[in-house]
Image 1 (cartoon, rainbow, N blue to C red):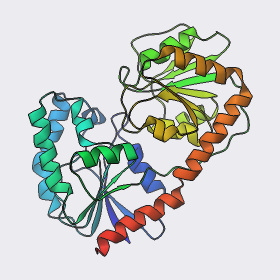
Image 2 (cartoon, rainbow, N blue to C red; image 1 turned 90 degrees about the vertical axis):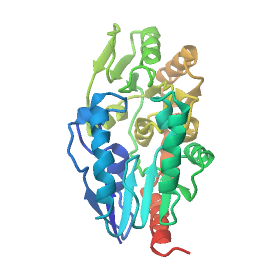
Image 3 (cartoon, rainbow, N blue to C red; image 1 turned 180 degrees about the horizontal axis):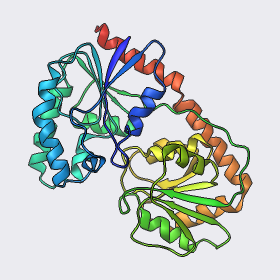
Image 4 (cartoon, rainbow, N blue to C red; image 1 turned 180 degrees about the vertical axis):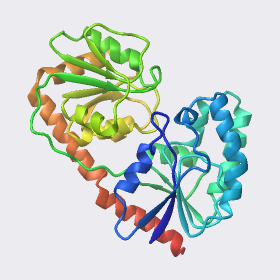
Length: 331
């Protein structure tokens, strides 16, 4: 089965967005993916999630070009995240969160959001379209927005068991300082004893004493850092999924995260969930994990089990093949 993938690039280095890269890395059995890149290769700075002149320019071009390009697409198409293609062929539309959650952060005008939702309902509720999203939290949100034919198929992820714990290292990973809770992470790290290693990956306006700051890392470098850490703190204030959480869990690193959006669903038994902005909860649980290699190992084993049970590439592939087959042979 041949499937055309409409790819999007990330805002850091212009490589494929992680969710797309994972689908391509673990193709379902019997499926061959053909990647179609964005029509205009804008610099990575144009891929931001915020409203500014760069994103305005990019979406203006998309508005004119993508509907026209839709007429040229043939066969089964798998599209990721929001775009302005109009599905003319059998089509899988993959989203990581409800559409109102995407636009709610950027536009305060409810009439404009309703207009956007109405447009995408007409596009994605066609008989030749199936929607894929990553969590039950997102599915419920999309259904409340009036979308149908939604399958929950999270990104595939391999697990990689580790040999030891007890390195006494805590990490934080987050590009958006405020939204990802970088300030909470810094408060936690500044309150931990100096004997612990504290690593902050991402941009911050501060430089806290005793914290090692790293602005950019490749995905392979980041996963290796996670593998050498005992705990990751992820005090997000709002997230569609948190792929870095899944990546940490895949190498047996427990996560302390916020009770927002899909985070409790993703972490399961592989970490600890705190109330949003509860610095004391993050501090106490992070310190407990760092202070006990046995506790870290137990939580890490739970994290591995969560990944192997719910994110196995083989099982995820079967679900995707069923979705593709439903479009190829609609009942």
